[in-house]
Amino acid sequence: MPSHEPVAGESAADTKRLPSQSPNRNPKHNSQKPHITDLPITWDNWWKHINWLNCTFIFGIPLIGCIVAMWTPLRVRTAIWAVTYYFCTGLGITAGYHRLWAHKSYSARRPLEVFLALCGAASIEGSIRWWSRDHRAHHRYTDTTKDPYSVRKGLLYSHLGWMVMRQNPKRIGRTDISDLNENPIVVWQHRNCKLRKKLGTIYIC
Ligand SMILES: [Zn+2]
Image 1 (cartoon, rainbow, N blue to C red):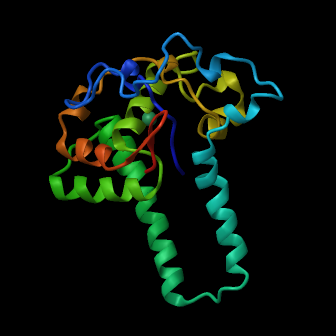
Image 2: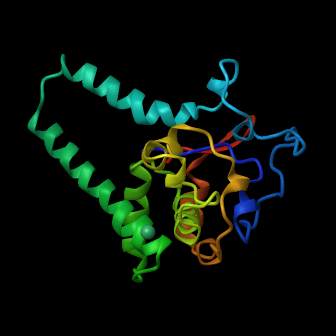
C-alpha cells in the first residue's frame, strides 16, 4: 500500500525536523489559504479531495496486474517471487515499521534494520518516519480528530479512506519522533522515499 500526501508544513505534527529541512519547503505555499480537507466535498472539488498518487498504487497497479495476468503464463519462478515478496514486505511493516520503529518493542542490529527498512519501503506504505509518526499519533489520540485513522470518520475511512483521501498534516496530533530523527537508517530511508513536487513532497514508498 502506498502513502501519501503533499506535506507543505509536514513537521507541524512532529516535535523535531530533519536537519536540512526548512520550515516551509514550498515558497508558493499560502498558509492563509484553507487546506482542501477543511472544505466540504462538492461536485466541483471532489477530485481535489482524492489522493491520486495513492489511488494509483492501491487500485491502479493491482488492476493492471490482474488484467495483464490473463495473457501472461504463470512461471514457477514468478510465483516464488510473488510469495517471497508478499511475506518480506509484510515483515517489513509488522516487524519493522510497527513494532521496531513505531512502538520500539525491541531493538535490532544495523543489518536487520537495513533489511526491514528495505522490505518496508518495498511495501509502498511510505517511509518509516512518516508511517511511525502517524501510527504514534493514532495510538496517542485514538478515535479523536487528531487520529489520522479515526474510526469516527467511518469504518471505511479508518481502513481505506485515510489512504485514498487527502489529509491535512496539520490536523494530525503531535508526537515525539526525536528517536527516529536520530536513527541514520530511518533518516536515510526517509530521504530516499520522497519525490519533490510543485506542491510539496510526496512519499512514494
Ligand atoms: Zn500499534
